[in-house]
Amino acid sequence: MNESLAQDIHKEFLNALISGNRSKCSELSKNYLNNDDSIKVLYENIIKKALYEVGELWEYNKISVATEHLASAIVEGILNEFYFKIISGHKINKAVVVSCVENEFHQIGIKMISDVFEMNGWNAYFLGANTPTNELISFAKAIKPDIFAISLSIYFHLPILEKMIPIIRKEFPELPILVGGQAFRHGGQEILLKYENVIYKPDLNSTELFIKNFNQNG
Ligand code: B12
Image (cartoon, rainbow, N blue to C red; front, side):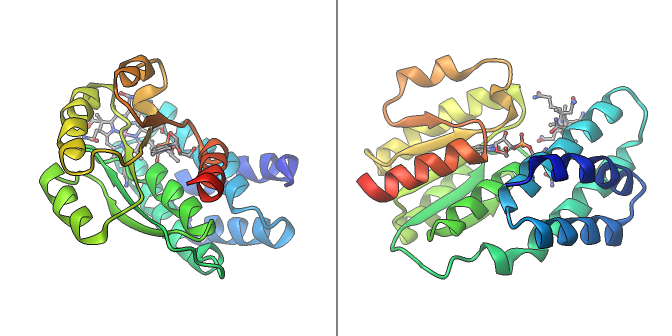
């Protein structure tokens, strides 16, 4: 993995992103993957880093809401461009239902998580943003997943997660519930300690380690 190459590309990617230059973002990502085949580094060290900076620029009124929307739309397009690299040749018979909590509109981070599951042979069912809990449950009853992966970026959505966990537990008493997202950036993990088999992971590497361990030990 070439993290210093990613660092060089990052600034150019950010500039292209905030000027709305999708083709440049696409070209930079393609070039990066030609040199170094790590989707995870592209995701973490180029795309996520750029979006965090977009968030700061927006917070300090240096870019408009429209520019921020454009940046996330471009990124969603880019993530889909590399799907052919994501789908693992070696499928294992495991499924994960991947979703945001109700009212949560940030879906890029959990899409990356979904891709890491796919890269490790899983069938990932990506439901995306703002999924009503009852819909999530009825979908999962049909799929019979091995894990749920749930995302929340807004700190104020933690109570929504806390309402959701017992509802999931009622139907799936033992299924691991993997959670993550920026709602936990400044704490909040401690509330998870009271729930069994609810596991927090902060990023793609730690999630991949968890998946590999699960693949081996169940
Ligand atoms: C793009 C964006 C939006 C877009 C989202 C579009 C989309 N399609 O997703 C839109 C315009 C909808 C939006 C809306 C809002 N946003 Co916004 N947004 C962002 C921005 C700029 C980028 C988000 C992003 O994609 N980041 C990149 C991804 C890859 O990072 P990530 O989500 O952290 O994911 C990583 C990890 O957290 C982890 N992870 C994530 N999920 C999961 C799940 C599991 C299971 C696991 C294991 C791991 C995991 O893995 C990922 C890879 O490492 C951020 C800035 C930032 N710091 O991120 C603000 C930000 C998240 N938004 C913010 C805010 C305040 C809002 C609004 C309230 C603004 C408003 N007043 O309307 C609304 C809320 C909407 C809602 N109800 O959800 C704040 C949140 C502060 C907080 N934590 O409470 C931020 C941080 C901006 C800021 N600096 O203040 N936003």
